[in-house]
Length: 119
Image: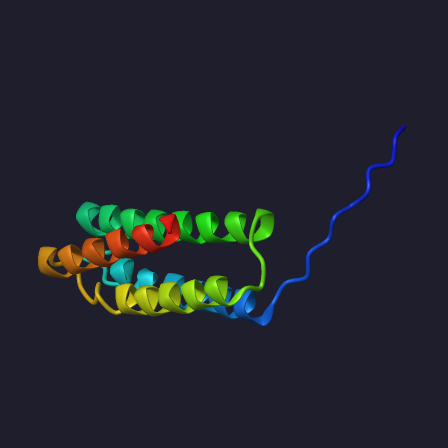
């Protein structure tokens, strides 16, 4: 058996704070399915909840994979972390209820987040 050297990378405080923002975001997303009608969650509320959580988890995974594989603790990476966190916090507060107006704002912010993740 050949021993492969293990490459370890320390987790920075900014990455931990980014993860904390996502934990807050997921806790806020549960408010979309918090209100029951006749003891069940309405299908449209569940669908909106599923889309919101998928968008959030997908953006978190893109950032985490990039940081773990290619990222460094450069000022550029840190600046993008903070910009992404501001967008995420705005997105988190944009879906207070399940109206289509709030979801339009959410998806515009998600598009901006995707652009910053691409950059």
